[in-house]
Length: 314
View 1 (tube, one colour):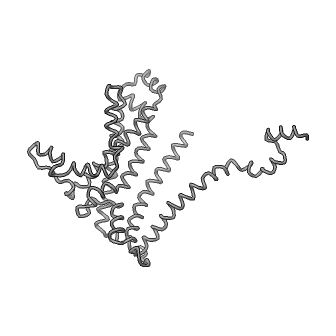
View 2 (cartoon, helix red, strand yellow):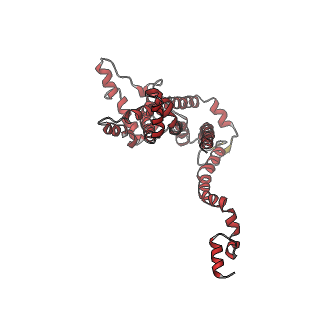
View 3 (cartoon, helix red, strand yellow):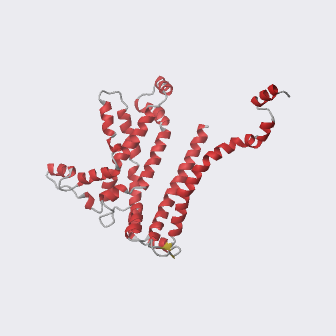
């Protein structure tokens, strides 16, 4: 075999001395390459996510103030949770957050449909709806605290215009959670609106034209042609909304600090309160573990749904 033949064979992927030396890599690179790319991310995931979760579960089985040696309690922290009215209130508030936050995807879709119309001045309206997205949650919380203020807030001024006294929403144990959720819904609806606007701008014109040719107009066109194309966007909007509801913390910390009398607390804030202010890291870890189990159910549903969508797209 002369040199020219060897070069030609190597170029064609034939077996030469160099090819034989690289044989194991060449024959396994189809799965080795993605594995090597996944190794750094997997390592970081284990280090930042899995190990702290394991540590939190371990701490939840102890009585620990963060300074002295932890004392083994077994499941006593979890037994205490079952009889703790503050935990029951926080869990109920988490459910309220989750249910009310489900308003965000349909509301965001409705606003996106309105803003997607070719009407003069709509760009200015779009920019107004984007405002909550550029505000930090702390800022939104402060703004709504002023809005709800029973002495000088906008809500109080509206009531006074009708000769009534403005309600002190953030001091009312029955209404405070709803008031905080409404404040948190403002940026969440705007975020869903942006997702649906992106989806509406990527609708297939061919499918829309085919629907119009078949006589679909108005609601029928939206329901049978537009909405199916927004299914994946809607799924992402629901997922992000659920995550936002379960990790609710900053708005509560800014607006009520869990009050009055713990009536607006949620699991995340109760965990923070027990661990940081009461030095009960074991009990706080037990609350975190319960919140993790709730989120694990949602994550399992999310992964199952994603796999099904991928199989349908394949």
